[in-house]
Length: 216
Image (cartoon, rainbow, N blue to C red; front, side, top):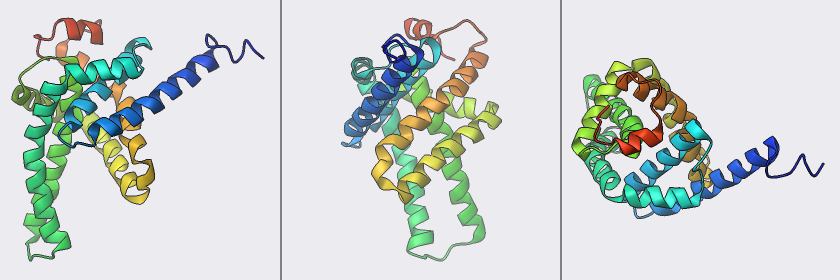
């Protein structure tokens, strides 16, 4: 029984992982509270998720905060670039569906379409920021390019994160868990897309970090 629950047993390792993941989720939520740091905290979350997916390692608070510091400038810049169009989209959505400002069906569909495009960019942008070093605007452009060239995976990821938003609206008390869970679930399909784009099946997150100038 003791061996079954030992830290080196399969169950012990998974219990340790879930505890680390829970602590990282709380850290992500706390680091995101200033709002302006959402990009850095989400990029750090992607970093630990990608490392865990590849090597079953580097998934703890120490590595999260190290990744947070590394991505503080770049991740924040990516988030601010994405925040501008998001604010416009949400303002228009509020005007049409909350304030009931009269709008044509075409205008409503345009709002929905731009929101989908924004989500397509966001689901890849922070993962790109976590694994590669590029200028923030280039990271966002690359995210859009990858989203357009891998539509099936993109739609799956959009659905996954849309579910997180829905769960937040229905049960806000668990909000600190929804995005981290989605990021961990999205790690493998996201990295598979990056590998296809880079054309190197043997690349790892560590190699990507060492060769950050190699733009996917």
